[in-house]
Length: 190
Image (tube, rainbow, N blue to C red):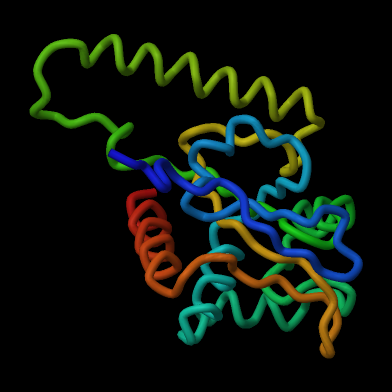
């Protein structure tokens, strides 16, 4: 038996002028890599990520997102308008950037019908929330920093185009559609 390839591709070569690194993280490998990434990670508001994913899908953003995007500074990439996101985007270099937002996944929200161990799950979740809050407080409450497994992450390419700074999703249209669905599901539950 000969195995030609196995596993999930975590990085791809993407050499571009002005990029600090010739490789980028793939969307499929992002789940495995996310806990280990410290640089080029930007925390963004769910509405910002929704607007960026909508643009990739060819869908119009929500009215609130469209209005907020009109007020963004000229030197900010399309889809980034929150003060903390803009501050974090100034700290990253052109190339691969991971946009992360806090979501409560369906699996971690707890099922009313599950048997046994629910108190232990709640206890672990409470400790994890406290740890995340402590980390954010330590970072000065800023949005940038290390992400955790409950975050929704999107691999993007940050560069300069004809219209200024740009931010493009590094995922297939099908993956982008799935990410948009996950994000909207989590936003509707809060």
